[in-house]
Structures are given as C-alpha cells and as structure tokens.
Image (cartoon, rainbow, N blue to C red; front, side, top):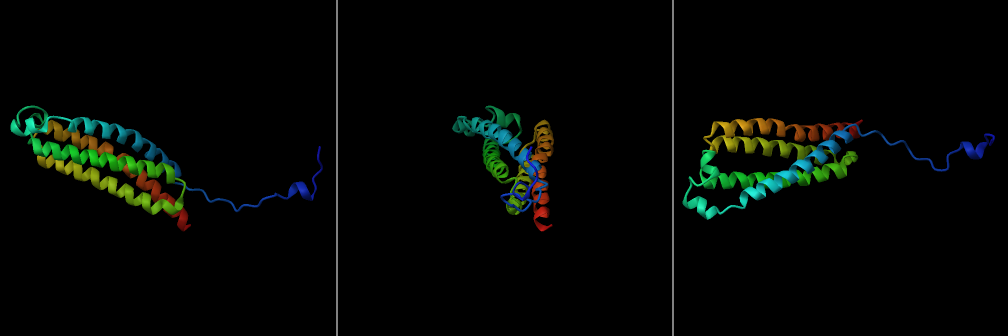
Length: 167
C-alpha cells in the first residue's frame, strides 16, 4: 500500500464547492413533462385546425363548433390560441430542461412560468366566454386546473433557484 505523503494527500486541482441548486429537479421534471404534453398538444391543435373552415363558416351547424355551443369563428380562434399556447409551452419546457441547473437563469424561468400560468387562465376565460356548452366548459375548467400544475411547479423551481443565488 502507498503510505500517505504530501504528494498523494494534496489534491491536484482545487475547485471551489458548487452550491446546490435546490429547484433544479423541479424545473427539469416540469420541463420534461411540458415538452411531452405540449408536443401532443401542438399535434392535437394542428389536427383540429386542419378542417374545411370555409364550409364551417357557410354552415355553422355542420360539426364540432355547433356541438360545443360556439360559432365557427370563435372555435377557430380558440383552437389557434391553443396551438400558439402549446408552442410557447414547448419552447419554455426546452428552455427549462436546458437551464434547470443554472441559477443565473432563474428569473427567466420564473417569468416563463408566470406567462404559462397567465396563458392557461386566459384560455379558460376565453372558453367560458365563447362556449354555451356546460360540459365543454366543465371539462376546460378541470383541464385548466390540472394544466396549471406544471407551470406552477416550473415557477416554484425557478424561485428556489433564485433563492440559492441570493444565499
């Protein structure tokens, strides 16, 4: 065995200890789930928008918008907003995963989480305003409450990262 001496007791490279980033896991998990669910959402909304809209505008009782208790134009606007919202969520999820361990990016993560929460609430309010179908409104309310979980988790992780920067 090697006997302890000065050469093998002294580390060759001295690096200062890296402080832990407490919100890293929350942001990373929320980001990964946002990427998965937002990608599904983008595909779903894109498929919804791929319809013969001129036919719907000519005959508003033709299909889905009529069943949901809204005009074809309101339905199209709501689906377009949903598509854009999912695209933002996807981008924010990618940003969160790639920057989860960087305390310097904490404020950006907090801002993006706040934007996601606001977009979810705006979508909920818009659905309540344009739809007359109580079942569709109820489903949207439940969906929005569940849909707020990831943006809130994302934002809380960013707040924890920011606190580690201030400590």
